[in-house]
Image (cartoon, helix red, strand yellow):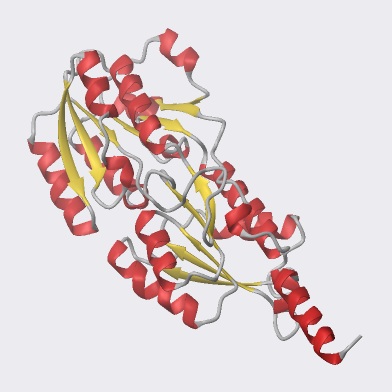
Length: 323
């Protein structure tokens, strides 16, 4: 074989050589994680992520490294943090929420991105679920459809409430769309919309909800609103307003009602995709995954604090009842 042909063959092999193998020539592969919350506050991802990765053979310090950065609940920080991860020469980026994924895509067109957000395709972050294209794949959590379902569940549990507040994150696609409006019309409900795109705006929105003479609250899917869920739960309790939330675990934190997937199950999807990319798969060829199991959780202690009595027939529908 001629030397020139041999060099060309090596170049072609490098193009398909798994990411982890290439990185390990000089160093351990480095996975960057861009979290929406403050560091060490309401951090639900880091521990299970490390645990799940170790269970499938990726042990931090032995054959992989992790670099976490935190947006502190401020989506405007995403661009700088994504740039920081790229500058640190990470081999893969895991961002959460529309602003963070979009920031990562602006920062790099070559580093693989495995993100989790409300609606990957609807937000324009991927071409399709089956063939996302570009350097991005991840988990799309059916947020818009579930926001409508949560309104219907809230109506069943609080049928006397006719004026419903909708707390939305202005930075995410799940805050738009006509689904909620149509559902409210069908249920003969009046929706009163409140938006927040930052912690400061959330404080003002919660003050406005408390003063708005609404009778219940649908807290829409959002990284910001999930990060701030303890604050929202406390304010809803003080205002004696029944509310429903996006993650099943939120009822365990004190929320009255929660309907949706479990964070931990979505994190397993993330880990599976990260593993495939590290072993050489291209994000463009990895279908975007969606949760398939949804749970209804009810917190009876919160119901008691609000002076509510949950009918036995409704309790029987719950996947989890917290007493």
